Length: 310
Image 1 (cartoon, rainbow, N blue to C red):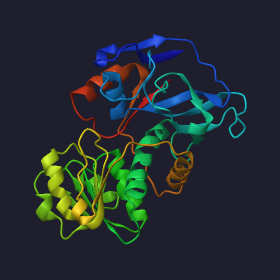
Image 2 (tube, one colour):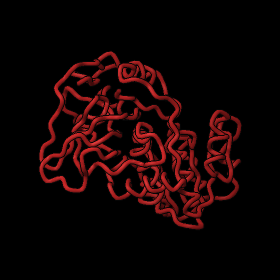
Image 3 (cartoon, rainbow, N blue to C red):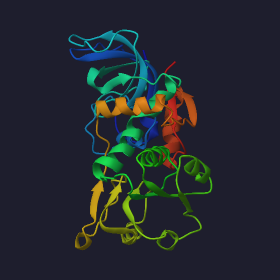
């Protein structure tokens, strides 16, 4: 089968499109014929060797995947050959940037039926990140107020929609390029961070500040003033310390996405119910993944890109 792999960490040039043996599922695993994988910034970090996840080399990137079940390992009873599935794969194991991937059965759930199977690869880790940041770590509840800094990306869109669904007032920052998208996701107030100072643009305080942007640490610390006593600051930018304020009881939490099969089932249900959207900016062939990593190494990639296996 064809796969994209790296045999050593380094720049995008270490990625190779190769022919390799089709893997075989062990007990509790399934073989998935890949429809698509999704590119995430963490793929760039693992390939570059600056994200501390102990991958085995050679490694296939692409831990978000969608496809159809090709073969069942011993003991797998809740999936069948031919099932359309989507999953968040263990990041230390081979991912879905290949024609086939072996996955733990517990990492997979039935795919949404209302969107193309390949596009479903864009859902798992970003939607799980948004949910965990808002409700698990942020402890956001109905009637509260949320500020999302850097809402123009994939996690931000899910965060806005999930918060609005929960009955939360949402203030969000976005650039002019992404403001309409953030507004259409349901944000009550959209602040243009290229023109306005958040400290003066936000009227009053918020219960939870969710940061999704690579902020200057001093600037990030200043924004804690927007969170009222007893609130929370949650951030997905693990390379920047998440500030809090112990004197005022403002908690600080840094989120790194965690596997959660039942939550992923619920997110798929929300997609099929029309309550959550899966936006795909680009669809590229498997052979174009090294070039996409070059783009990612040079700067942030706008939107969500899925990598087609076939």
